[in-house]
Amino acid sequence: MKSLRAAWRLWRALLHALVGLATIVFAFPRMNEPQREAEVQAWSLKMLALLGVHLELHGSPAPAGPVLLVANHISWLDILVMHAARYCRFVSKADVKRWPLIGTLATGGGTIYIERGSRRDALRVVHRMVESLQRGEVVAVFPEGTTGDGAALLPFHGNLIQAAISAAAPVQPVALSFLDAASGALSRGPSYVDDDTLLGSLWRTVAGPAITAVVRFGEPQEAQGRGRREWARDLRLAVDVLRKTA
Image (cartoon, rainbow, N blue to C red; front, side, top):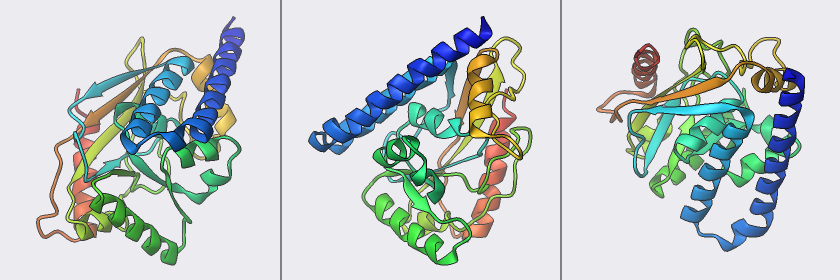
């Protein structure tokens, strides 16, 4: 029965992804930016429901940009969860752009791509982020640079935080966690770390116990003279405090 339920969830999720693809190709060209953002958020909310993931929000996301959202990184689900909580433009590794179907959806959602390990490309991406923030947009990054196990935070890199300093934009810390809906314990289902594969993580998510995705928004911060490295350390501490808030 679990396998049948999981297969049914995957089939419906695939159909919803194809609907999203059609929306990007045929409807987005006729929409203005607020309409596209609302469509991405609504699509993400429905996708979570189809995957059996309940969204729980704490705190208040910034009502408007410019603002840089800084969050911990656990899973491929993080982007869906944050889009469902509050539309934002993500900075993501360039590999995602080449993934079948997912890449097109990510691009349609406004993703900014970065070649990991390339200092020159990091500078290009920071410049693009500054332009987005100066236009009053909401941009989101995962400063750990890779996924963690959800139990502890990796160090935060400060490179992309420079965009908020250059654009004189606030940064809002965001803490993500995935919990077993019944027990409230950390869920391993959506994990995507070490030897985890995307398909394996996806299958655990749809076949396992119900999951609650918890998003906690902290208070926006201004740089107040801090450099990117110092600010990154302070933001990591803020995210860690949010993660441990009951």
